[in-house]
Image (cartoon, rainbow, N blue to C red; front, side, top):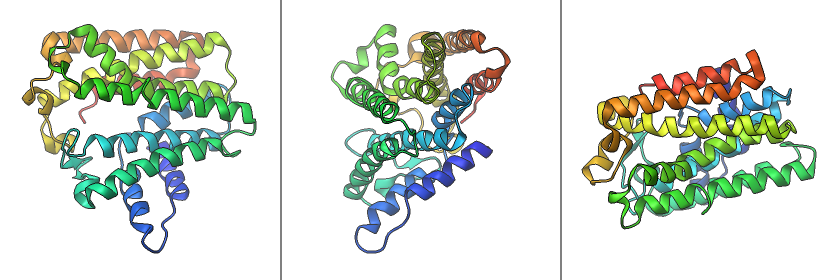
Length: 287
């Protein structure tokens, strides 16, 4: 909770309100970025970086940049041209609170501002490290990652995807940014190949478990509990992990992935306990 509040403070500082007509898009950006959420991605950055004694201020800024990209993706994902959702995190979505054009611009603004944050010396004093952070986030969020996954999600043939296809879709749409969050902590800490590989494997398993639990909650929970619409994929006939594996099978798959994720952290010993804890939280979360 304290780390989430720290991320919110950094986001508040990075997105100061402005006067005049331009202020509306900043207001919409702030509305999305400061409206709560689990702050999972910044947590993964901070805890991965902590393994290598990275100053917390750097990790928080990098985590805030990744959260900006995540919030941009939610704004655009909720638009009528995508999922057409009215609620997010228990509040009206950005295009409902403002309007569609402002929502599109707010998403664009958050995405581009994220790279400005990573390019700042406050993210890391070494220009090469900053360049690697920028390149990594670009790959994770672009056509080779999140955007590519979203394209698969809305493309013809989405309804007929098998388990391998759904796994690939979610590895791009959700998993790529989660994996980069741990990679960013390793980049900040100049981690060696073995340590970077362990964190990447941990995050890859965690990202898939996160999405499977999302599918379970989408089936079992109410919109009030989740703070967003439920059952949309099922209503649209889209293949999901629950639809392909059943509730019992989906739970077993998520449990196995979390167990595997925690196993990858053995190289760090007790220092990675909080990362193990967040993996268990992903499995047990109710929202």
